View (cartoon, rainbow, N blue to C red):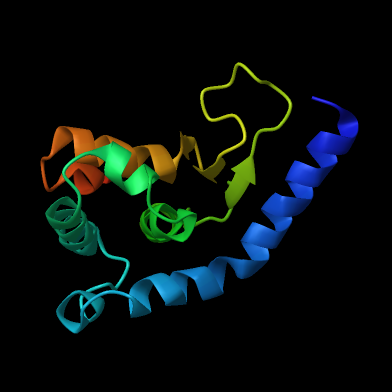
Length: 148
């Protein structure tokens, strides 16, 4: 990748970060009221949003073919919930969204990831994986395992 392309992708990521609160609000506002009222960034809310997601899509290819803001919204909600639940009480460790643009062999290359303490995860891949696993508690299971 050229330095110019890398810089452009980094600028797009910065724009994405600036839009994140609004994108999250748009995502939440797009959900039915009975779902919206339960989206409180708790572990339990991850099961609620996952079950709703599973009721809307039978396979990850379906959500990938939707407008990008659909998958983005789910990814942001999952990522923000992980960040809030895993927040380091001492503030010694980063609790941030990042993007890897240097190592093209990195599993999450060019995808927003979260880093909280020793945890690094890609909410987008969690969303698409939950559609393959069809468990209804995949998000919360990953988060609870990380807490342990």
